[in-house]
Picture 1 (cartoon, rainbow, N blue to C red):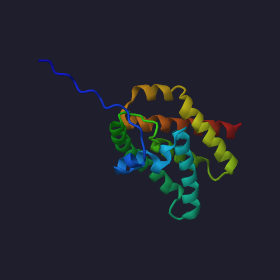
Picture 2 (tube, one colour; picture 1 turned 45 degrees about the vertical axis):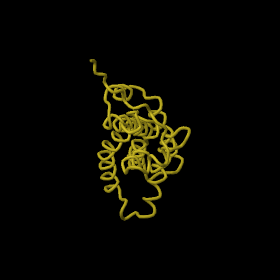
Picture 3 (spheres, rainbow, N blue to C red; picture 1 turned 180 degrees about the vertical axis):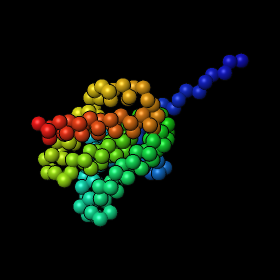
Picture 4 (spheres, rainbow, N blue to C red; picture 1 turned 135 degrees about the vertical axis):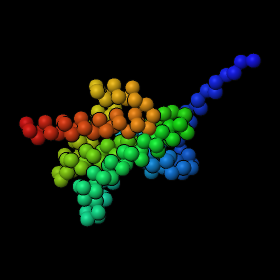
Length: 173
């Protein structure tokens, strides 16, 4: 008698019922922004950008730069198990609907480039999306070698740092 290993579950389509079935899904899927039919990563990044600006302007005493740094760190840490669980439940470790990594990463970018104009923030949004989508080295290396929730979160954090590097060089020149 031979024992067959069970195959991993096939990737399923993410929807609002799936997202609302567990708090990890809700977080990993960016409170619904990751459910966009096309370019969910872009919609997640847009949600992150807009939420950063709304929260910072609405409650400036709470959403200070120091608190944002803490929010980004905690968001990164809770994103690891949330993305790991959601990826397992979807049958795809880095499912496209998981956008918490983009949200946390764009918060970090916005934290270090603000205060600035909406046009500069838009440019940062575009540069970040470029790095996140194209995944040039070293992002590609980490995306391919580090798996699970930590890998999902890490490659976007590196894309955020590369975006900030571009802006630092731009400001010097």
